[in-house]
Figure 1: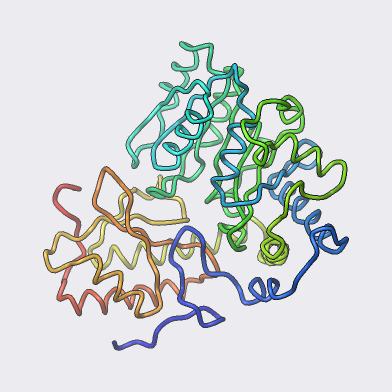
Figure 2: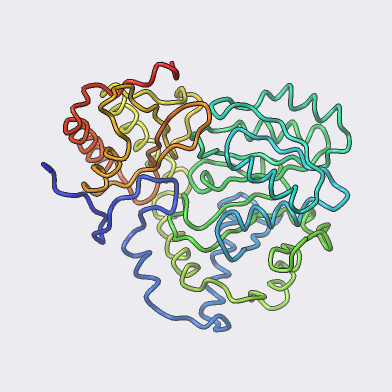
Length: 383
């Protein structure tokens, strides 16, 4: 090994993943204290967190944040099963694993489901989507993923929202890996609900999902939920009455998120965080392409969240050796999860900066040299 292993400011490996991700020392430090869930100090921190999330969404006065204990998928399931009534029908727009997951959630909940699916490297055709809505008046809600981390594709959420509104339907958005770094302003993008979580672009730790809900739409959700714990209407009612969670909250996660939100604001909010991530992505993409690697997506479809690369065609390239070599040098990446191509993924989010990406590129070069791989060019089947 030629380079000293990279590490975060607390000595941990750098997570080049879409979340959980590398967090700041101060976010970690916020978790070392204990708080009572009924204590006014904690209640105040939680109130601040929920209000700041609404502000980041551009939903002051029109929307409310309803938190959900658990990972982001808990929030997505709470959103679908609370907002789609038993008599409703959900059209799921799919171009990756998270659209597929939403379809499964709706089916298990006994909701009528239709799907519009494109390959993982292809955004939805809005004309075809509109034709489906026109042809099926039973569809009441549309579900779409903002940034689909299966590939890293950025879907045209603003245009899709305008189409759904034009057709008189309701939009549910999974903005899990985009919220906080890629703008989606509730004043211009009309949706009934948007799900995200603590451990993505806000740079907190895992354990809290949340749904930003349009107040008028949330008021119609009473009795829709298929579970007690994921009932967003009941959860919101509890906060309105007591300011407290119905069931034990992930206190340390919420306090850490409060600190992370302060740091997000200090960086310049959504614009500032997004700028750093775009810089990270450019350094990574340019450097990997210079070594012959090919990205799955063209620049115009690529979100600055996670980058998917085709596997090299060189038979000396062994992904597990590549992964282990990078991990030994302090960089943790993700395997691919595509059906359209053999691939791996490298994330740009978390407490990472362009110099970290340059360090990762140097580590990639070292590992390739160890494997005697001279070019990261993709498999012929992917060309």
